[in-house]
Length: 388
Length: 126
Ligand SMILES: [Zn+2]
Image (cartoon, rainbow over all chains, first blue to last red; front, side, top):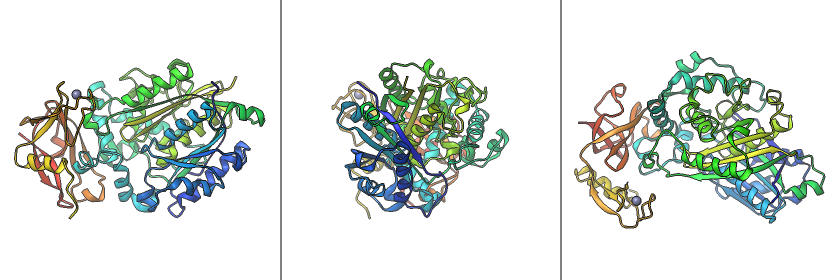
């Protein structure tokens, strides 16, 4: 079985672009990905498109064909929705279809327009990733859910808000050179600790911003890459997806993400790698505590030790296990339905040396992407490797 | 007036009357309605059991940035409390948010959201 190659990728600037439509955002990213790949639109066999809140933000359903049209692709197009893991789920399906030999070229991506509806409505839209009857109606917000998880984590394993602040400081520093990042601003631990509370114990700097943006990647079969002489040196060698009860209340632990554990186990086995092989990771830090849970699920840190990773410098760009060199969702931004593919784009560029932070991981040849939906009731993990 | 949410609204009615219940499978897994199958063990034999009088707060958060439907409620405490084999999310009332702690013993009731007047599960210290 051959592994699909990442032939090209593209992202828009992430940030506040309230007047840009979803279709325009995706057109920019999709066309950039096709150009980067050197693959003609006519060769695309399918579009898998991630989007979460299009109905609420743009009153737009049925976005697959709309987005195919926007990038000039005449191929079957399907939207994937798994909350914040929508694009990760699309990547996984693309990998499976390319491996099966059914398709040779799949354009995978996602877009989200969020700031046009304002912070209050966006908060409301994000909340619907939770159980409406039993969580949202009891006041659960997206930050609130992670606040519940953070408090549970502190009680079980220790750690405090200052440890989380180090995650934010690190990711802001990483984003400084990322021209596509939403927040290119250095912050201090004090800034984070003094920021207003959002959902105690999480403050404003524990949360990713609300973001407009899109990302796309052209995934091709190994055979297609060879026949067409593509410069595609990065393969997706492992894919995994896990699920969990939707409502946090229905899980035995609030300080772990078993869906991500399962996705990790599957993806590592698929790629034939283990956590010790991983050189660099992009993880789903929608909140600082989420990065802690992610690095533990990925096996990069023992349960209870992820909390100290940023503070101890291990996950900084100078550390042994750099995490979120893009700035993560925290500083790069989180256009929900695009995030999973933005991670694939970042890791591809880090591995092929074209990312502005690639110099921090010059010898990296194994990378891992962790994309989580809601409170990780959905999670995908992908392993990327430099083709030897 | 929107349609009732079958199972859920019936459960809220029962909680409001002090006759709350949960659904339990043969293996002791607890859930809230509507459920036709236990997600843990696949049992389709779910019985209504009376909800314990008191629950224990397992985790909690004070929400400052609320959705529009909770704007006037904020800041408010949302907590998950264990009631025997079932766990429930609710708004903690009648206590200073800063004083809420894990392990606090609470009773369950149905209250009103300040913003919309809609019903919500509420916990009060007991
Ligand atoms: Zn059961």
